Length: 394
Image (cartoon, rainbow, N blue to C red; front, top):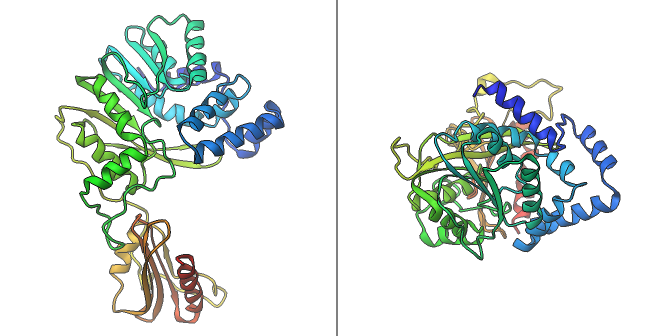
């Protein structure tokens, strides 16, 4: 199917759900206040906070609340571009599959779209929010879709049934969004140890282990899996990829980085993986940081005028800051410290000189890097920043 046709069809489908696309926060929140009462907004915000900090029951309660008729279009309009991005990519990869499982389908927005486009395929949508499943099934019944059914299943307490040529799972495997993942070997490295106990701990505390095992049980030997989770950060991406590989899943395509706009921010999501158990493409798992926009420091390329007293010669917050720091010529360390922070990070902070300029470098075992360079006349600002970092570690 042509991409323009699919995009238009998806937008019409989202409109049928009552979802709207907004390009500014101001417009969205004005509409939100028109649609929802103060009581509904307070209830939604309160339940969202419990979802963020609570357990699986708090998460289920949030999605049960989100399925209410007045709240549904308002909340899910925030995901409009997410539905476009994931929906179009998934539609293009449904291929020859006859039986498709959409795991963590929620209210079924995309599941129903797929079923409408491909009446010759059989779809099953599964979610553990009973209210979401009820909405999804009601919408499917309204459209008279005979190739689609929904079921309320919590895989943490019961297995899935059936056998599928394709399993689609997006934002449903690694639910603990606040979990940092696995630390690197040291603040100098991005590589992770091959530590089975750390890997198992990550899979269990995020719920990944039981969910992924349940899905593998119903995936046909020659079947494929399309997966998109919030694992863009390297510390989460590495253990997630290892969990996939440890279960015999291999890359059928190069992972695709996902970016879309929500109401409040630009989201760097994914990667989106297409997996199978054959690994015919022989693609390797990549455990290195993404290529970023940082450049090495070039002293000859910068200059400061009298009016630029607060301007830095160089600032890099990307992983490439490590390479830039390593290549500073004739580094002279003025002061440095390496400590274990309260949240488990190993943090290194370093103040120094390099060929007439002053620098501050900070790195930790969760892949954060920062390098700042100023002229000597402005080095006091780096001293203050260095002390601020040290105080934050106590």
